Length: 596
Image 1: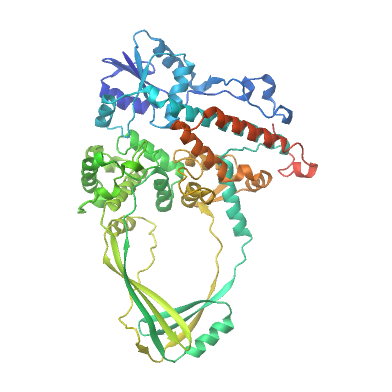
Image 2: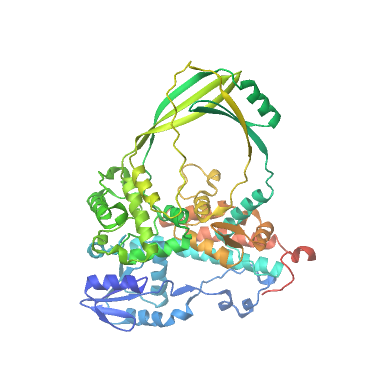
């Protein structure tokens, strides 16, 4: 028999149904030649520091740095029963081989391998690698199972990431906690993300608004502006000089411009737009797309690709047709999709962009929770937009010269609405209407035309501070953090991965270093203090971006995992040495309440 191990019970159920393993047992399903079980996420994790030595149960500066010579793993306590089930199944004499059917990515590989190793299993295993839980995709995946050894380097990268996070997290957290007598959680992605919130908050709190003035002249339907005059006196002088005078159309430029359709959604872009349109947190969006994936209505969510492969063209056309029939918002929409625009094999690695599935055809969408309907509408909208026609408009720029001053105005008229028609249809359905830049059309004039007796006026304005981060803008900042510190050909940039960014934001809020106010994310006093006391090496996004690049190279066999971890150990040791003691005043920065 073949033992298939999925990541979650719901996924195992979908696989078991296809394989005919319908007989339910305690912790698994069986039938035909298959036993299908599951992991509940991480069943086995790196052991806590106290497992290596009892003295580490107490947090002391003198014990740092803590670096295991030989790594230990332990079964997560609340999941011990399921580990026993899997361990027994792996040892079952009926089982001749295994299939790793956990999520097709780095963490999914780690989840399976740690259970496999902890159980002492040596039986051969194959790898199921799919991007959808539709029956057809599961069947196709089982028809093309890959040798588990092909993913050894993926596992090596995942384990290296886990060990490195343990070393930095355990030592950094204990170091600054013992120095400041307050639990200060340090993480290689969490900390630089917090630093971005603190930096933005600092810019806002120190912002000094400045007054400026705009001068406007006009005749009939045509008005033009001279912007950002520094003083009221100067602005009034310019307006007085132009009042009732003659202006000439000194320059007129007409240009046809094109706005290409957007790309398909990867996870981060979907999270950003779900936050902007619906106010969903990144974690809420991840949970919703994961649920829709398990309901077989969306493809695999934890992807960083915005393209599909060329062999998916027929499926994409089919799905577009289903979206227009099944999602009430787009019923009756007629499209001629350009699939080639979203097709690029070179930009799809582990998983393609997030799409609805053909299973949507059988779904009563109105029976789904409102939140899930919203995500389906969003993903459906993006698919129709991405494969739609270009948006074309004619832009006119006019300069008016009056009494030696140049006044400018700009207008546009839509030539072909294209994909924007779908976006406008979607935006019209929102309770809080999205405000697009108003389309300003200009009257017909020609270069050299004279405008007699123009009116002139002055308006007062103020410079505005930067805005606090929302989850939309923070996710964008995390995605591009540190870009200026890397070459253009550096593949992995930014903080974290699409799969981890939501969790990082939640940890910052849960640990009390950031808080939500409406849609904004704001650092707390403790968050600001924490960033102040940490070295730039830890608060800079450069370190974690370098990690991600090295981990990717380990996956490809181009970098050595041991050398990577040795570098992490050296860095951590140097960090501990750099903070031998603090002054009494500095040690009380976070208050006097002592914590372990």
